[in-house]
Length: 277
Image (cartoon, rainbow, N blue to C red; front, side):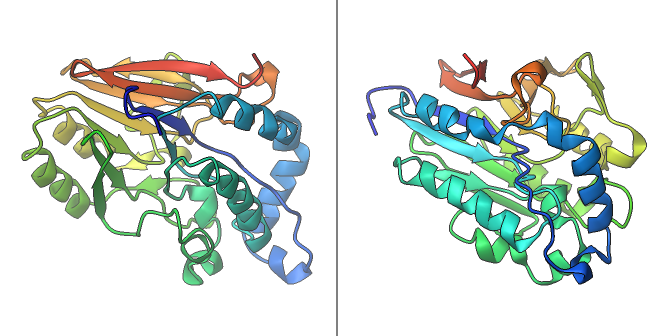
């Protein structure tokens, strides 16, 4: 790493590695819905041949950290997690620190959650399933992780508890520098770029936003889940920005890519990067 260059955060999300179950028993739950959706809908949207293109782009960075905000898999199958791990291992082998939080697809079935499949297979990268976790980047930027996913039988709703929100409030009151908060679910349910229906929203997001807008330092809340790029400032406190990155391996017609984040002079500078340039 070249410490003379400003630290960059590379935000990727919604990788959605897929493997069809080899056993009928693995389909006797919500996974059967996910498999049908993949075959009939999502399969044509994702281009995994772009993996090497992304890794080649990443080689140009000299001082960067990679944030993965969930949905590494489609149905939380063991083989899917190993595909994701193989990809993340390649990033690590390029000497980039990698932080991973789960998405709702990584908690797709109650069985996957019960067996802690995501946490065990990605143990080297995964943020512990704490209410709120925090670390500091090499430039001393605070990086906060919010665990917002849970298994659902039919919907893809997320949840942040009031206990978590209070913990976050206590942390933010002590922070005096620009801070990045990473979660899977967006705070805002709709922007000009996306709309989240009831079945895809984050429960208690209104309470979360109330805490965020009390900040006196710049906050960048990064998330995924909706597969569209969106960058907006809070209408009540412009110090708060909400960044949603697109699904990394969306094909070129659907604008797959990642976000590059730089912190300079106390401000966040965000750029959308395509893997098809």
